[in-house]
Amino acid sequence: MIDLYCAGTPNVLKIEIMLEETGLPYRLLPLNVWKGEQFAPAFLGINPNGKVPAIVDHDAEEGPYGVMESAAILIYLAEKTGRFLPAAGRNRHDVLQWLAFQAANQGPAGGQFVHFQRYAGPGHDYSLNRYRTELHRVYGVMERRLSAVSHLAGPEYSIADMAALPWLVSLSNMFRDSVPFVDIDSALHPALSAWAARCLQRPAVQRALKAHATIRSGLPEATDDDKDRFFGRGRYAHRMA
Ligand SMILES: N[C@@H](CCC(=O)N[C@@H](CS)C(=O)NCC(=O)O)C(=O)O
Image (cartoon, rainbow, N blue to C red; front, side):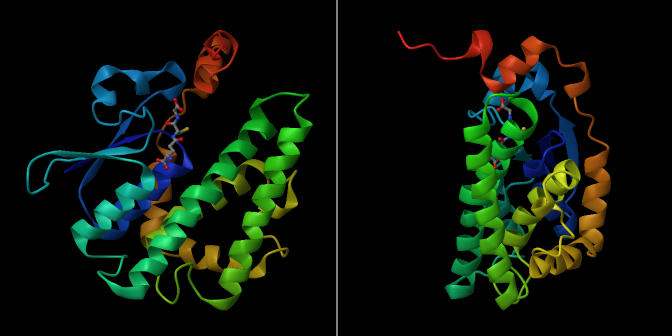
C-alpha cells in the first residue's frame, strides 16, 4: 500500500496519474495546507520540506520508505514498477530531461503565475507580467517539441507527460477565460492541445482526475491569517535584522 499525502494541486495529480497507470494500491491522505497541517512534525519526518505530494511506500523491499518531490516520486514509482521510464540509454535520459524541464520551468512559472494572477492582489504588475511572459515562453517550448514528437520525451508516453499534463489542466481550468494561451484547447498551440487530448483520453488519467476531484480544498474556510502563513507574508514574512 502506498500512502499519498495530498491536496487538490497539480503536483499531487501527477502522482495520482502514475499510481492509476501502474495499478499500485494506494490511499489518499489529504492535508489541509491552508491550516498548516504540512508543518506537523510527523509529516515533516516524511517530507522535511513541508509540501505535498509525498508518499510512504509500505511495501518497499527494505521496509516503509518515504519519498518527497513529485519528480522524484515519479522516478521512484517508475523504477519500482519498471514502467514509463526506460531502464537505460538515451530514451531514459530523454525522459529525465523533460521531467527536469517540467520541474524547473513549467511548474515554477505556473506556480508564480497563479500566485500573482490570483492571490497577490493589485499593485504587482511587474511580477505578474514577468511570470505570464515566462509561462508563455514555456508553452512555446512545449508546442515546438510536440510539433516534432508525439510525447514530451519522444514516441512513448512517460512520466514526463504525467508531470506536465496536470499543470496544463489546472491553469486552463483557472484562467482559460482571461488568459487565452493557457486554454488547453487553444488554437494558439495546436500540437500541445492535441497531445493533452491524447493524454486525457487515457482511462488511468480519467480515473486519476476523478480521484483528484474528491480531495477537498481548505481554501474556502481559510482565514486571512491562514493565507498569510501559506504565502509567507504579513506577520510570517522574513524581516531583515
Ligand atoms: N517541487 C514540489 C512542489 C510541491 C508544492 O509546492 N506543494 C504545495 C502544494 S500547494 C504545498 O504543499 N504547499 C504548502 C506550503 O508551501 O506550505 C513538488 O514538485 O513536489
